[in-house]
Length: 316
Image (cartoon, rainbow, N blue to C red; front, side, top):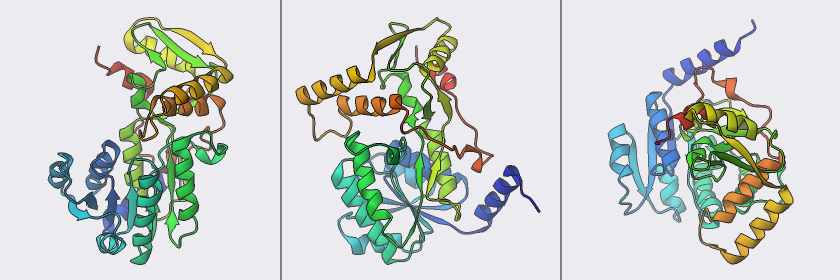
């Protein structure tokens, strides 16, 4: 008997609803982490949210309202973490930070998961495919690569989820669509395909993957693959106003701009300084970390948000 994608998706959904699953979630007070918790709960599974001791985040009360179990832990204490992970079917990390978090905290979480026999681990990647980039091309992604090397040596099944750029950033935080000037700025090739996925779509996919015991080492998704010209069309259609393209130069120009910005404004302790965002755009414009093949159809019930949808909802 040959199963279609829809049949396979239904089989997975039946398994998820018929089996008691406990997802141990780190980073649940962040935007992505909280959305992952929401989607796991919507699928009828248990969420055990690991929260730093003494956390005063308003999201803690919201997590309780979702029905999540709150466990306050010291992320440097392996024994505490192990006790918190006990009984988990998958540990999902949605933490954000620099080396102390992405490498060291996640390593502690990994050691705890292995110690109590949690079978699966999803690290906090949620990015372009950094495995295709040379070392030094992106500071934050190099940290994920460093943790990946530790994860791949551990006796646990791991799945990294790559989603390109968070599509939500196109509404203003990413300096690509300049709404005031009615321009879409870029470096390099305006026809280079780029991967975008909303935070919520990424969270829904992650929640479903966390409840799927058969995930591979890597899953790649994109709510929409669009070139700069595609972003131009989406912005024009969403706003009802024509947008034009603005080529700021080649990739060499952008590389120089990154070096100058990093020298003048190093902000080494900031997770997302200006030059880090510029590095991410440079990586995407090279085409090296393009996600392929895409695994969007692995869970056919998921609905994907387009760039035009996101831009149309942007406050005027």
